[in-house]
Length: 592
Image 1: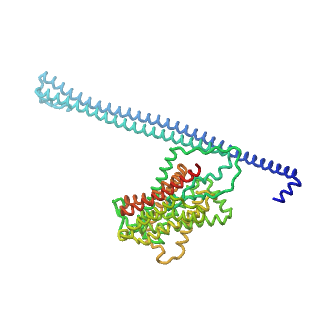
Image 2: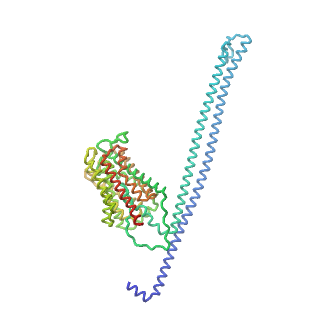
Image 3: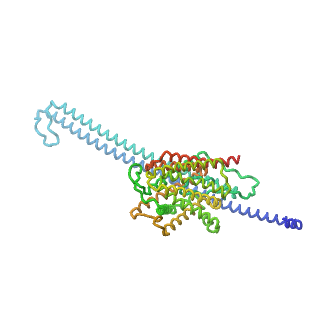
């Protein structure tokens, strides 16, 4: 500062002139950058409008084809109706000819009787039967009239049935056409709304293009408490940042979420929790127990593999093969810039960031293997409940590493989680024979899984803000895949090595595909739930994981729990939900 003051006293006009020149050059560069970005975005908007016009033309062509097909179908139906009418007329003509023949026979017999000819003489032509005596004429006429009436009634009934069937078929086809038309209109409306939203977002970006670089940070905020035994999106830490220069006019605040969007997000979060619970139950079915499990009370399923460390590694690898085959497509759909971010990560050479990313992947890998081992030995609902020790370890770790001291509600919630874990795990030790597996191994594996998952969460917090959640998750999955493959490639002892019968490989492959599909489906639902409702509300819904796992296990495989265990699950769920709600309310109190 002293040196700067000396210089300023000697050549103050020259310094002021140089500062003005630098400021002028910076302003010119900013204007050039703004014009460049604005020109590119205008080109994108023009391209989108051109594509919109093409889509509208295609839709008009489809509607024209629909009208042509409808007219052709009506013509074909009318042609079939004319043919059916001609057939009915032919049948009616045959009936009338037959009745006319009977009447001619009767008239011929009457003329023969009047002329005095013998009634018993046969007719040479053989076309008419021998006439009956005069006493039976009335009876014969009544029979003929009854037969004629019966045949005409039958013909009209058949005609009515055919008309009813044609009418119902035509009505069904018209309803189908109407449904297709409504679906096309809805699809067109959604497409137009999506294009309009993209255009509006690009216009907002044109107004303030330098505020979009950290737009993803809010998306994953407060997602630490999200119930994700399979995965968790990165959660940024609220670390202090250097104050940025504020513009003269404050940018407009983002509009509040529409109530319908929040409801949609909550439904998606609940669906994600349901899929995760089904994942846990399917994993429980895949692992062998002491007795075959009755699925839906219909058939017994003995399982595929025995519970063990090596077999858990193998199940994880089979599941990750499916995930790594489909995850890049899903990541590109959710975040088109995913490959740019990954390439930037490889080119950055940031060893600290790479250490945090790979470290979090390693802890998540251990957590996955251990939770699989736990679900194979104890009921799925109890295993997931014990796994929920990770919020306590996460809060304590944040207190030690980041100085984030928990509040009074946080302390009470940790006490509630501890009490709930004791209540949930006590029936397993009290009656280990009813469980069927090694209770000690299952409980210890669930505890270790929760602790390692807390390590994953803490490392994810440290790496947040430097990498988008979707590229982060893709790199994590790839690293876990490599860790699983290397662990199976390294020679292990008999207690830790995989023990698989050659005859169960088809079932294991099918199980891996099911688990992988459930993983990706839950990831997709959770991502859209965070977009619609926010990470905080999605994490509150995610706390239903233990209860829903226990419920689905009871419904699908009739895995009953003791009342004490159910009480423990409820206490853990309410405690974790209280921590999540406290994380939502605390920032609002500070802001007010």
